[in-house]
Amino acid sequence: MTKPQNYINGKWVDGSLGKLDMLNPSYDTKAGEIARSGEKDIDSAVKAAREAFNGVWGKTDAANRGRMLYKVAKILEENVEELAELESKDTGKPMKQARTDATLIARYFEFYAGAADKFHGDTIPFSDDYTVYSQRVPLGVTGHIIPWNYPLQMTGRTLAPALAAGNATVFKPAEDACLAVVRAFELIHEAGFPPGAINLVTGLGTEAGGALANHPGIDHMAFTGSPEVGKIIMKNSADHIRPVLLELGGKSPQVVFKDADLDAAMPVIVNAIIQNAGQTCSAGSRLVIQEDIHDEVVEGLIKRFNKIKVGPADKDPDIGPIINKKQLERVESFVARAEKEGATILAQAEKPEGKGYFFPPTLMGKVNNDSFIAQNEVFGPVLTVIPFKDEADAIRIANDVEFGLIAAVWTKDNGRAHRVTNAINAGQVYVNGYGAGGGVELPFGGMKKSGFGREKGFEALYDVTAVKTIIINHG
Ligand code: NAP
Ligand code: MG
Image (cartoon, rainbow, N blue to C red; front, side, top):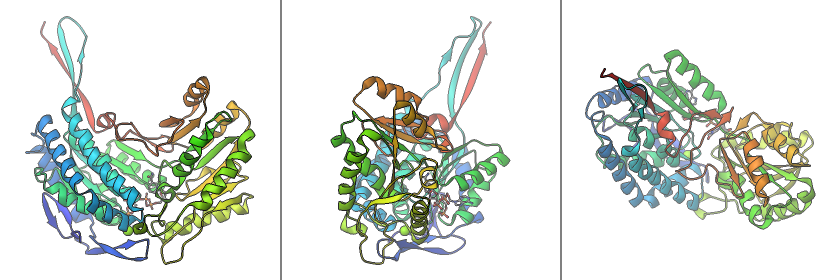
């Protein structure tokens, strides 16, 4: 069992509002407990972070920050199986996926361990009388709020770059899934960070989340989640005049031209929507397909959708349950509305027995790109098929949505691949592949209403630092 406590100033402490039960969505049973926290806990965490930033942690040089992050990476790596079991039980993701996620949190710490002492400013040519250089300095205390869909991965994604750059951090994971994150913090403690450099406060969004987003002692807020809460976070940040990073999901197109290698494309297209039961901000949820190959592709996809195995996460099926009842009902309502608006269900996998919150992967045809299901994030395993005539039509449809997170283009024509990737308005564009967010090294983030700011890769370090320019007049 993990500690139902917060990690503040290097110590495990009870939440001021008691405890919350965690749910195992595969069986509708209790998965564990976490601390329920509010303003008081957030305030202690922010104070501890400020002291760390002004004290030992703030004076830890880049090479030593890197060494500490590397220690974290090694400790997490040694405990992948335990972390994966907790993540799988808590989120309902199959063990195979949970193992990948547990490996990736370690990889984030490893990547930013290496980056810590290689991120630097420039010397700037100005005038013979001056020497000018810039430094990349940490912002101070950074706040981090993540959702429930990839708790372990997102912990590494948001915290490791902030720490590598020298910030002190206060982190609130989602109430719906964070048991593995609490365990990861128990392990992180072993790496020996100075107290206060890295703080964990669990609880409800409206209590702990709101208190963090509103706290005047935060210098940067990083948020991943829904556009609705993203707006609140941005307004709070406006009140305090501080930068904010928002990652708010997408409605990502997979554009398939008639010359594409369909044997290669088909399994990737399916995986891009069923991974994590479709609860992925970068899920490939709109299949934008050239009408000449529409029937052939749909036929192939129907066969594949019918074979997808849905079940409890510990049985390692192709996909597990939806995170909870509220989300399941949301997915069901999206599909019902699409049917009402004229779309048809072309294929649906079998729904297993049991008390889990299962939604079978569903392929929907006759979908108009203007319709509700094509324009809004379902956050479930629902793929909509939208036909196009030619290249211009494909680009128009791909961009005709409020989001712009990621996209894929499938074609063997090199010129077309370049033209279409240049024309698509998204933070990441794949050619002949799809990587729901891709690797740790690849800058990731939104355009349009998908948000702004970049995570992953070296790019993430720019978001959590400021440039300081030093201008020396030596006459
Ligand atoms: P959400 O409400 O935006 O939750 C995201 C995070 O924000 C959680 O940690 C949540 O805490 C916290 N939060 C909620 N209200 C807050 C507030 N007033 N102030 C500060 N923090 C707050 O998302 P959700 O309800 O989990 O999911 C709803 C929909 O959002 C999904 O169906 C999906 O469309 C979208 N979504 C997108 C992503 C993505 O990766 N971009 C991820 C998840 C969901 P608690 O959960 O602990 O209350
Ligand atoms: Mg849970």
